Amino acid sequence: MTDARIEHLVTSGQFTLDGGTWDVDNNVWIVGDDREAIVIDAAHDADAIAEAVGDRRLLAIVCTHAHNDHIDAAPALAERTGATIWLHPDDLPLWKQTHPDRLPDNRLADGQVIEVAGTELTVLHTPGHAPGAVCLYDAGLGTVFTGDTLFQGGPGATGRSYSHFPTIIDSIRDRLLALPSDTVVRTGHGDSTTIGAEAPHLDEWIARGH
Image (tube, rainbow, N blue to C red; front, side):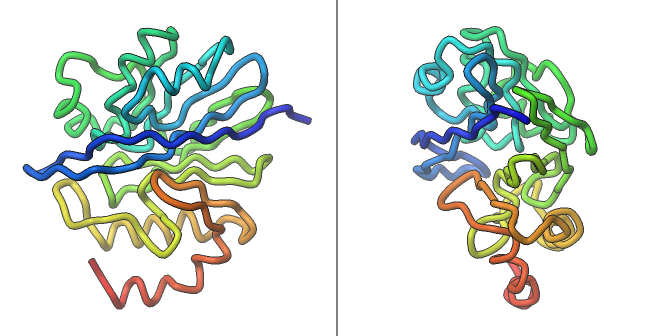
């Protein structure tokens, strides 16, 4: 048994890449119990995230990828809480665009297991939206945190630098759609969905292309 629960807050800021800037709302996910927690994607507002964590021990800040809107608050949150920052090494070039003077503390690897509050999140390397994009699957909680790899209605964007549409399709088909159909998909932006709701649409996504 685990007392782990999932908490959610939305933070607002800007996404900047390839010379463009867009206003965005980001999902920040907290997994933990009353004693300890991890944060998935420290977006925009370190103060708001720290307030949501409260007096719990923050074990880690896990980055699903290194686009600036998902990591901009990570160093400030780490400094405030003592948590370590985890990122897949393939996304270091993107990370350095935002934080050239502060590297992540630890490297995520495919198949790695992150333990918090008696539950386990397995790292799935799912490149395509970004080279080092990962999803975090928690079988016990029946959920997968997909960052910007899979949304309600289709794959994440692949029209900008460091992204590749055929690769994200392979990641979704091979890593995500293989999960149980009732798995809740908790995304980096927007509403949650399920694997079962998205799986039937794979062929139309491929036909639509990006």
